[in-house]
Length: 304
Image 1: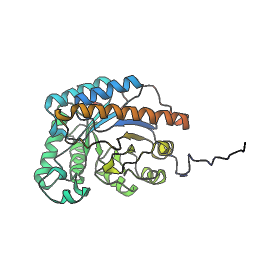
Image 2: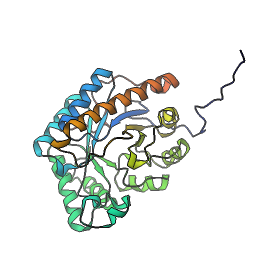
Image 3: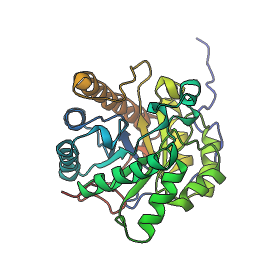
Image 4: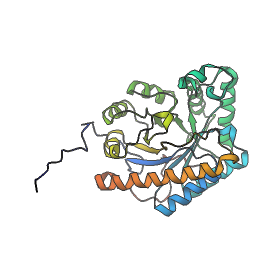
């Protein structure tokens, strides 16, 4: 037998290590995206319990306007009971509008087209808050600025989390700092940023970063499980997001897709379990998280 030297892989980016943490001392949290309604949320919670995965946040992509009041109340109830933040997408959006540009480029898919769309987005934000939700997902710069102003003057709750969408591009620290100044409390980064580039964004911002560890096909389709230790070191505090490659786009979801959406939610939880197992194997000190009693102050759990 010959001795084989295996080069060091983890830490290859030599990214700066972030000193920042969540309120409970955690470096990372787990987010399950595309949680398209209460049935999907219930499936996610059931799978998480079965696999021993702590879910900190779920996010929804179809939008507040695609959910009934009863459905939103149920999602708020589930989030409050289980200590999980619920972030609902704010629309309308350019990709579903009557204009033609969004059919040619996804760059405007999340835009609010015209003042009427801006007012509709604000109406949906107020509706979600009234029904108990304390997390909003925003893909338009103007909507972000307006929500930030309303929150600053007390017209929206002080504890409201305003999370930027992956549809609002963020690929450098200066852009992230602008979003944070406008009111963003959680920053969704580009799906293909290296650990070193994430460290640059972290150096310019203090809000948690949201990073896809497995990205949907329309956002690159990357599967980055072995990058997680470097990402956690560089980007903390960071939400690790589990999309699914080779999965159908279910937006807007509804009863006709509930079974599929629930199965996709369960699979995202399974992928989260795979990611966490690998993180624990490769970097057990990073994988450790404090126990959860009551939800920490910086987790925007719904009120119910």
